Figure 1 (spheres, helix red, strand yellow):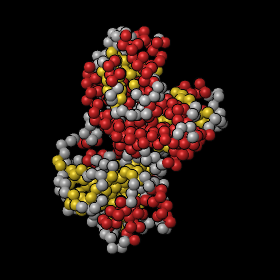
Figure 2 (cartoon, protein in one colour; figure 1 turned 90 degrees about the horizontal axis):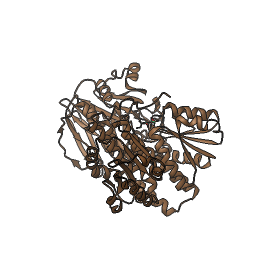
Figure 3 (tube, helix red, strand yellow; figure 1 turned 135 degrees about the vertical axis):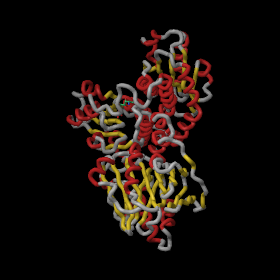
Figure 4 (cartoon, protein in one colour; figure 1 turned 30 degrees about the vertical axis):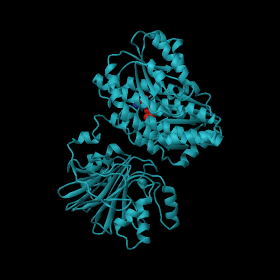
Length: 610
Ligand code: AGP
């Protein structure tokens, strides 16, 4: 997730406004920044890796002439956070300038065909194909206006984009286009703005025009024109007056980042499905050839690793050992060796315990692989190969969208491993791939239809002193994650363990009214045994709260309360949808307790101390 901004003024300099506006978008990405302006037929660009304030201190981002310009603050997905990969990007002539938020899925083939036509690329980003595509379109169609060239180029892009383009040859306009990444226009008295979200221009104007997927916008100092990309038809849409405060706008109207990030999961899951296959193939090849595989992480990332160990085993018959990073050196420090492969999973890529385990393994010549949200983090620098989880910055301390993104990437690795090893039929592979593609909509449906019910459940159980979270198989990981969420942001003592373990001790805690949350998918062999576990608890007076597939009448009849997810979810993918109600339950319980879900006491977003 990155932040784009553009402005065209009737008079005055654009650069200082772009710089200030990018600061409002910094929560969307902060590993590099750049600004480009047009002045007297010249393109002026300043960009570098680093946070906005640091880059400004060195380069003075305000000092660029011209009343038209674009800017970008980056969260690296393709290409490390280096100056060469920072936006804006230009074409061969340096006259066409683009800033972009999203993922160009077909950038590899576009880049290859453009290179064959003689285009020279300098970065490793997907974005850089866009200015060259516009340039090539203009070359092939000299009669095209700049707008028509951008339109034709955009039609060739697959994937998600919110982009803003300027050209020294037509300096009186900014062309924007949107598909799946947010884009909004600000209409000021003496200026027009385009941005990833209205936070960026709210201090200048509260008149906003929301742009929809498949629309292109031509901005001039006199106004804006919206066209449909498919047929260039004019779209008439009046500005709306926005009554948000800037603080609300950063959260896009949500009361907390955590809720915003829970709601972002359909979009972030879509992004994980646009992974670069090359890196998935590379990592799965290392895993396939490994003698022994350790999955090393902390907290929520460890729960993703636990789930992954079931995926790798069930789909590819690959044994893998999830290990708490903080325990790794004690547990395996002497035995890890050159034949070991470590897949370290870490949203921040900086967690000290995880890096400690990685360093120990490296010193014993093990192979290090990384899955992280922070490209350019220490984990990416010490990994033989790493892959980004495509979640965008997560501001809430509690990991929510990063958990489901990690699970999605790990599932895709399991699919590739399974293909390599031929352990499951092609039909089953096709079935799982189709279900995987559908997960964003499934998660969307859960949020849409169950959020209110979960909110009521938090109210109903607000005075409960302790909760059990129980699951079987892969959903033991989901149970652990639900427990962690409730503990860390609502401060409610919670215990999670495999449901089969209840009778080996924990059930002694049960007394009438004790709330037990069961994660109970229909698919797989665990459903039957889970019913037995529910009966055990029910017989001792527990309050049964079940997360079930819609229409699971058998478990419904045994439950005091239930939350439904859409039916037909394969067990091996079930942690992704089944965790959503648990994330929402923790969030609304925090509100019931009157605590701030975004900033839980005693915790930090990235634990960089051991
Ligand atoms: C999860 O909600 C917590 N914020 C915490 O457990 C976190 O998952 C853990 O510290 C690991 O962080 P990482 O993924 O950045 O390594």
